[in-house]
Amino acid sequence: MENETKKFHFIERDLLVYFPKDGNKGKYLNYSVIIIDRKKGIKQSGKLVKLGEILENPEFENCYPHTVGYYKEPCMEGAEFKPEYLELRKIGSIEEFWLFLNALDI
Image 1 (cartoon, helix red, strand yellow):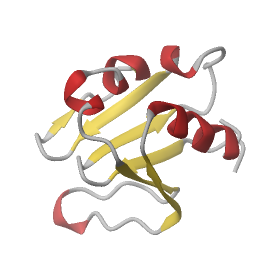
Image 2 (tube, one colour; image 1 turned 120 degrees about the vertical axis):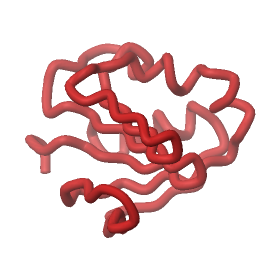
Image 3 (spheres, helix red, strand yellow; image 1 turned 180 degrees about the horizontal axis):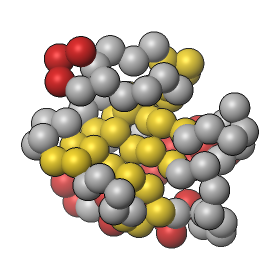
Image 4 (cartoon, helix red, strand yellow; image 1 turned 120 degrees about the horizontal axis):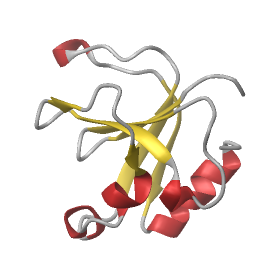
């Protein structure tokens, strides 16, 4: 799974975060990711944003804990989105998300 896009679902927020296969190095906050906000119906297709812009947003920070699911199958749109999670974690801080990413070798 090293060469696959890493996909996470922040379940309560219904936010999908896709880590590209390559190109990211250094601190996680500076990683470029693709974000799909399923609640707002916003898809920033092909546009990469910095992970820190999402995770350090007060709207996000004030809602801990988050349940985060890691999955690998292709994303399905609409009501058909029912990923088979490879791992689920309840995270209570940004540091716990970093530990999750480390555990998955991202």
